[in-house]
Image (tube, rainbow, N blue to C red; front, side, top):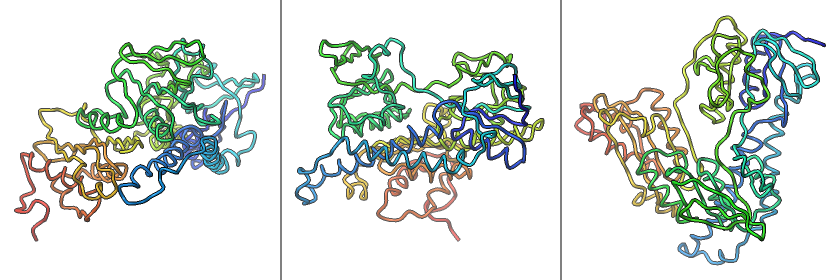
Length: 471
């Protein structure tokens, strides 16, 4: 049985694995990158990028509904060719995947990049599918995740579509139920509804799109619920109809559809790895204990990174985790902790749902004050015909330090970034409202929410005019 020795073995060639590899190469350590299944990142293949492509098509087509109010005639004559839409989305998807591969694994030798699955024999020893073994002083696990599908649903075959399979559809069905209205389910659900698919949404939770603030949740449900029906708060069951369609029911409501989009979250890709060989206790998901600031597993020379740990399944977080894991693997036995970035989550539905910093459910109500601005009267939003939603901002009552925000608002993806940068700098509410706000922009809605927040604080910045700093 052949056995190779390397300094670092990285399992998984997605965003986390590639970033880990970059840190290992920078340290001039010998390495091998091992990947079973499809190469490329989840983001490029089935996540961030193809979803944004279909979202853009759907938004452009949906815009026609505003034309009569604006005096633009002929919008009702527009139509979509769904097979062409899906082909266009795949073409863009393939471009993104090719860019990832051409800048990463395409430049690796066969000894550096092994396209096989691997399993642990012991903490520092991996076995490949062909029986060969790799002995590595340090190992990074970055195997990503897989969509969850209830076992009892598998009998329905290709009538159940996961988010990993959605973009392979040649066309869209006439009717579809979206079960699971988290980030990707809500994004795709709204998009296919706007493209003419008879869409119905279901979720066991009462919340959608990742929001936790009750008023933001209410705003999101009201806005999205006008585009397609939402049935929330109850478990869903499926049954086959005589004509082959599926009856989707949550006990209170039911609908018969051609296909079901199962968007029930993702589980870590750990089944093949034989992590029991590490000799550490695994949690109910099969994930070993690890430090999120070092990515080290227990006290072993083994590191986790990316969606496989299920902590922050977002591309920039996966990249950061890969860098941390790769750095520590390359510099073992020194293990260095790193500060993680301010939490930022964006659902690219319309309007965007954004959480930045501390979310509402993590706040201490005794020490926190809240400011709010509804989007309805905001001038720029009115002009765009998108004056729907609300913005909620949070601060520490005594110190005035800005803590976070949740919002359902147009262009909130940009507002969220601004606030994340301010949280990173430790800004107070007083400092935020002294920043310039142009007119007319969506940032004025944020300005109004911050002003409302400022007046709830126990402290202020001592200025007679809160928005201006005296000379």
